[in-house]
Length: 116
Image (cartoon, rainbow, N blue to C red):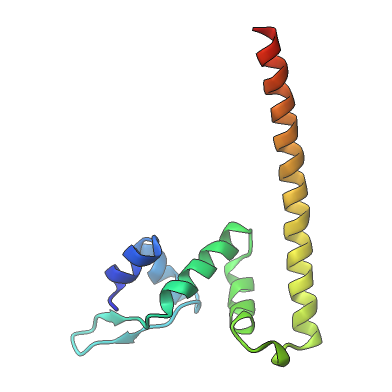
């Protein structure tokens, strides 16, 4: 599929797709006319990249972890598992902080609703 098709199917801009390629997160081949061509599996990969970015992972971390996340579990090394645990723990801490902030906002809104 061409870059515009991938952008449309994944909901990501063409500019972002080019950036992912520059960072080594996404791969394409070239047509005879020089257009980027992506495999059908690129849509799922782009969605995974978006999820991991939204969770706060950096491009560097993504480049390190993406091949591992797509590899069979039996190939995981203790070092990789440690990295995955660390990222999961960081995300869990972030979720707890966001939940606390949401709860405080709920309390403020509830109090404001009672005052009117």
